[in-house]
Length: 156
Image (tube, rainbow, N blue to C red):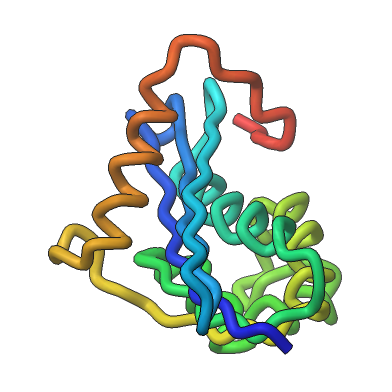
C-alpha cells in the first residue's frame, strides 16, 4: 500500500457562515505534493473540517496507508476514540441521547475509512506548523469567495 501524509483544515467566516476546506497530500518516497480546496456559502466549521478529510481521501485512487493531520478535535476524536462506530451502532444517536450532527458527512466518510488505513493525528491549530498554516490560508481564501455553492447538507 502507498503511504500518504495528508494535512487538512476547515474554516468558517462566522459559524455558521461562508466556509472553506483545504488539504495537502504528499506521497511517501515520491516528490509529489498536491494542494486542493473548496467551500460553501453557508455552512459550519465542523462541516468544513470533515469535508477536508473526505475530499482528501476521495482523491486517493487505491487503498493507502494514511497519516492524516488535523487541528479538529471534533473529527480526530470522533474517529480515533471510536465514537463514530458507536454512533453507527446506535443509529446515529450519541451517548447523551441526542442525534449526531452532520450524519450526511459521517456517512460519506465511513466507506473511505474502511477503504484506507487512516491514522488521525491532532495538531494544535495556529501554532506554526507549515502545512496546517498553509491549509488554513487555503480554507480561508475559499471561504472568502463570492461565488460559493450552497451546502445542501447543512441544516440551520
